[in-house]
Image 1 (cartoon, rainbow over the protein chains, first blue to last red):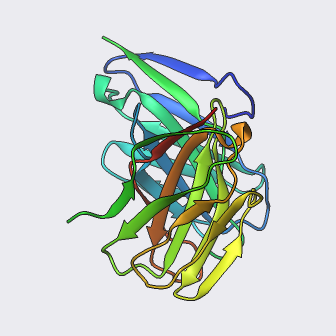
Image 2: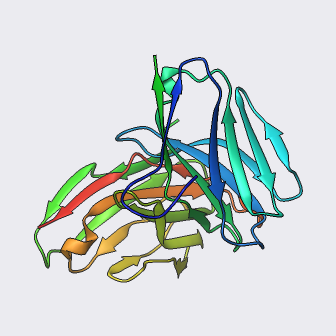
Length: 111
Length: 114
């Protein structure tokens, strides 16, 4: 999962395996959630989003699950590839368009 | 299709100097924002704007000013740079639809204040 501080949590997976990245969000009033991928030296790139009236949404090789009861969000990546190696951020929205970001999780894919 | 363009990519300042980080978007987005990213931390919102002539403070606004004279541009000004402002700065924009919308990010400006 994600945490605040200098040492980001790291998830190491074998190429071809599925990855699950977790995120605990802070505000029960949050109505929109989004996952970003950030590669070294680049800006965050949109992966997938979900609104609070849903509990699951699927994209291409990615699935986001939302559990509002425990304020938990997860990103599942199927058949993880070396190009998936990056830092992954979840973000929540509870006040207009102000997204609040978590600290991030490092995903390392081993070939 | 340029998206969100930030300049410069790198900048070194001395304490007390001033400078402006430029941000422009060509997607006709109403909403624009500035974030800073420090090692091991997520992005923190500095200032944001929901349209030309309208700006507001985010989570960490102290030491920064913004203005929004056009829909396309949203410059960030450091009036008197401090070492604590050493960071990577990202500009982001989106449509404004009242319920959250995905942000498009620029490639960032790496700023060092000595």
